[in-house]
Image 1 (cartoon, rainbow, N blue to C red):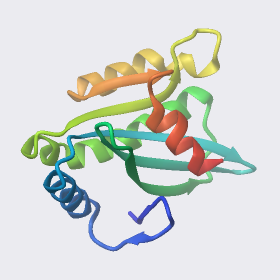
Image 2 (image 1 turned 90 degrees about the vertical axis):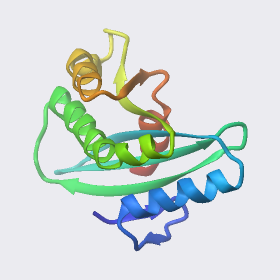
Image 3 (image 1 turned 30 degrees about the horizontal axis):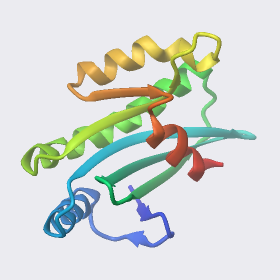
Image 4 (image 1 turned 180 degrees about the horizontal axis):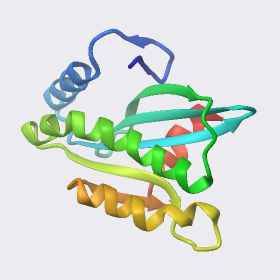
Length: 157
């Protein structure tokens, strides 16, 4: 997986090592961190582009994020696409969760799924919530899921 910073700079280390270094650096600076992981997607012609983000929040001092993009030619229903987004977020959360435990960093998985039944994405809400909570992660959906609905959304649009 190829990751980059928001400014486009490539991350050359394995993502787990880059996250470890970020946690150590930010903690040494005196920041209390929280990490939010989310994925959003956009259908562009025959491609579906996914963006997964790892958002680091410095309590009271802004934040930064790492980004991974990928494209798929597969065609998805809205529910399938929402659940693929969640699966991509969980994959990264699972890879990194031992670091967050080791360094006592709170982590949430954000799903770009609306809690309002009038929106199409709501079809995947219960499955997504069950998947994330079943993996032992904290879950946020819209409007609280800014990592996916704002940060990752900005990357794919």
